[in-house]
Length: 160
Image 1 (tube, one colour):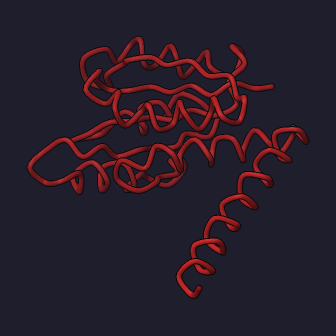
Image 2 (image 1 turned 30 degrees about the vertical axis):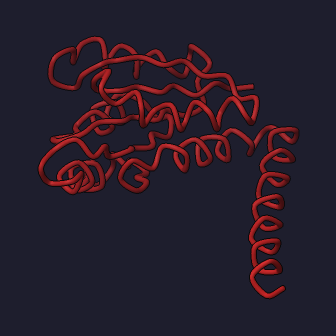
Image 3 (image 1 turned 120 degrees about the horizontal axis):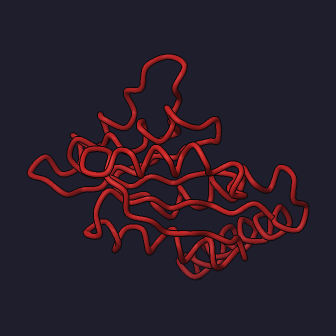
């Protein structure tokens, strides 16, 4: 199975990254977590992205706040899908990070989830990998079915 790279711009992003880690663990998807800054360690971030496919990664999740250039910097150096997670870390409540992550130039796409949406980033990364992994696909379908049952149980309780 391909693994997922989780790259944070700062260790302060770890509380958000943990939501992705939990999801990936739950699906049995292997992952690695790294801290690389698009601004403070650009060479290391570039090297990670350039070597990611050969190293067995199938997708990359990039978490960053404020200027949030990390997802774009990684995407510029790999053909693997990059999923950006804008992190709420400034006076602008993450809107700055969201706009920085989502406004990529043509030719360098970054899939972007909600502010602090690391759980959805993990689900999306797992879905990407599941295209070629039937067992993972079955786990994702089961998870979605269980989520639907929880909603229906709440509806039944509400109307009881």
